[in-house]
Image (tube, rainbow, N blue to C red; front, side, top):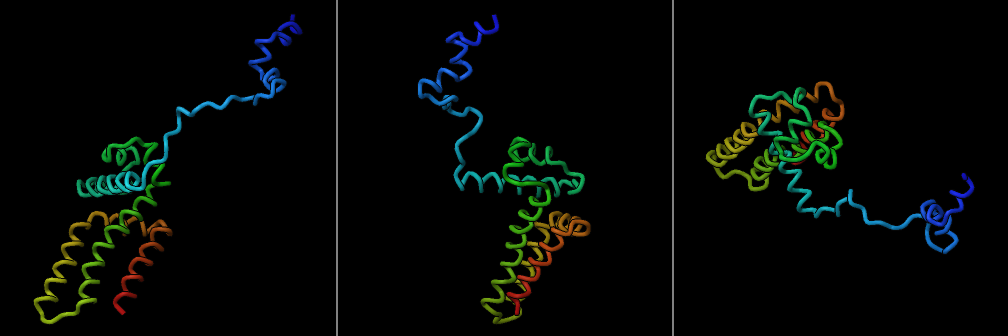
Length: 171
């Protein structure tokens, strides 16, 4: 009985033995239903921006970064937790990405002052007020960055690099 089942033509088709003899591949090519087509760079950037905005909203709402879970961030951004991990390997990478964008805004205000120079005290005052406004806008994020930099060396190195590049612009 066992030998009869092995020799049955339908069983051979299922096991691939007959396919190999017929010159067919042992596994038929089937379209994937679990993999999506690659997203456009614009879509990718839109998701990253939405996650960044979600983190800032949560931080502004009083959540501490260390106690803020990936699930909560994903919910606030309107994405699945698994989608979060397609864009960020972990919360540390997310924090550095969001801080990079925020500090670029902050440093660009002061950088414009350096490029244009000052004709009078009023221009200096406008620049300093712009820097203060940017710091206030991103205060919860900058506080989270300082908190995490205290125990996560990668974040501390990132922050030293960001500040260092700004200082290089000043010189």
